[in-house]
Length: 452
Image (cartoon, rainbow, N blue to C red; front, top):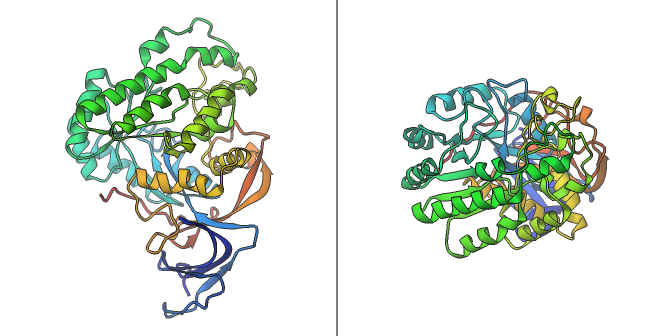
């Protein structure tokens, strides 16, 4: 008997058609058959199967595919590393994530840097891991070689990224990257905030521990204007584009219009924008700082509406950790604190908690966090429970609750904006390619490359 040959029997299995009582058969890491719950399963593997019987209160669902995670390894491993990030991900029901090209040193902006990143991750992956490349000034000639080497697309910034080794692109450099990426059918993903709008916004109030001052320094119009620029570039070049971490609901109409006009554009948002509100952030609570920022409750309502109507395609964590000292909790100064929310272990529970309060189903959550994200990075074998897919599965108890304690989380620097919050949804087990992940055992994840 092998761990890769398993029969999961569950009264609640989340499939594309909804929930059903089923026996899900796994052979050699793949879903080989779907049977009625009580069906006898033939032993065509030549050896006995391990049978996993899930309780009536547990849902067998596809593992989360998180397409936006900052691991920072190598170079800033004190912020986060592949060991800590993939273990935390597995504990939270994430079975695949795609690593961002910054804040590692070197950043993933050349094929040589990609090789270094892959070598670093190879022995530290508890789940499956893919990689984004970066588009920065002067590396247009590296984009096609990185594409051929298997990155899932290219990230750029329209303003300072926060680290000097990953500079922003100018308006003309953005168009140059789009033209090149369009020539080989690639994908450009954009951190879209306009530097000029931010520079002209209130900045003189810093140092300040008031969240309202930080919010004023990153206005919605910075996002709105930069997203308009990306859409215009996509119209000109035909490049497939993706807007990262949408926080401004004011940008949704132009994204909707671009989609209706046939522009190849998708958009994501994140748990912190959907479940945390500016009105609730205390002074000095820099664990809530991220860029673009967490905005007001009315804006949050409109983001949920954008998900419901398909303007926003998916939800990702944007797990962006740092060392605790870089959060400047001692002064609470939002002006100098690192901007990023570490949430890869909590994303599914946070979103399910917010979604159920608003009347959304677990199937919708799974679509936004698994099927849509897998499609976004062309991982056809991920994100759904269908015959032929990788057996990336989680046992999820949607009605169980837990209170978040940062000290119990597995990412390296244990600080979280969700401290003390009660969340719905407990992960009872995570399987990657049919093998249950033991965060205290050995890593068995696979490094992924783009295949289409």
